[in-house]
Amino acid sequence: MHTFFRTAELRDIKQMQVVRHLVKENTLSNPDLVPDKDVAYYITEKGKGWVCEADGQVIGFSIVDLQENSVWALFVDPAYAEQGIGKELHRLMLEWYFRQTQSTLVLGTAPNTRAERFYTLQGWSPAGSYANGERKFELTYSDWARRNPAES
Image (cartoon, rainbow, N blue to C red; front, top):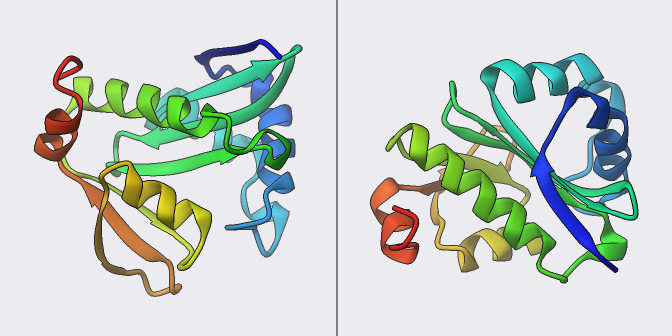
């Protein structure tokens, strides 16, 4: 399988939504909570997104919100899990984000999930919990730069 990573475009939203609804963790209680127009807003105005394609299909994506300094999404089709796709989407997102700002980046994820372990392994620090029960994580510019000296 050949994978290709690139900046997300408006034409990718339908396939990104398919991936979002395939995941087994951090699922949406109601798919209508994240309409296509919100995804478009995040990848064109609030921040930027990236996709991973295999055979012309989006199999993973990430989105960072530069205005709120937060990771808005990082999802990989479960059929392609643990192949480095999430790590590369994460790397692309952080590299771009920290070129724009040195502000601390935050995210939330459900507790006791593979996602929580993933972010811990990528150098994120626990920073409490959100009201909805998600674990809050943060990544400072200095922590990122220390782990990625060639990119900082």
